Length: 100
Image (tube, rainbow, N blue to C red; front, side, top):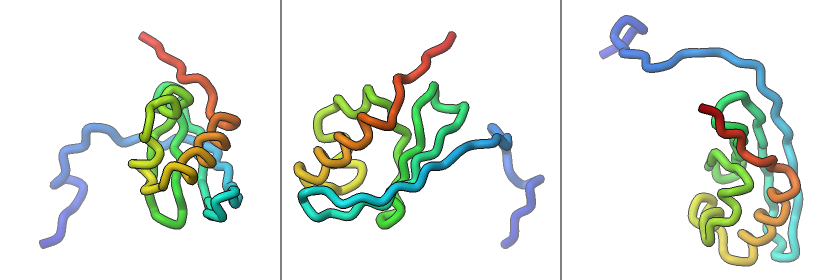
């Protein structure tokens, strides 16, 4: 069966200019991180952080980094790898922007 746009009930459909930073680094754990960090006007100032090797993406702000075990669960990391990623992301993620 094929679908066309008329068969779908769109809740949202928009296009926006974004910027993406591609970063590769290796920490003390010798884990290689290949990341795409996308800045968008959506998500209250949080960024889309994609692990390009695993194909996993999360919407992250600095407040998410303080949640114990969060990065480890999302990106399937051990504790040391999670701390390395967390340390890097603290440097690049800004504070979330909440509006009414």
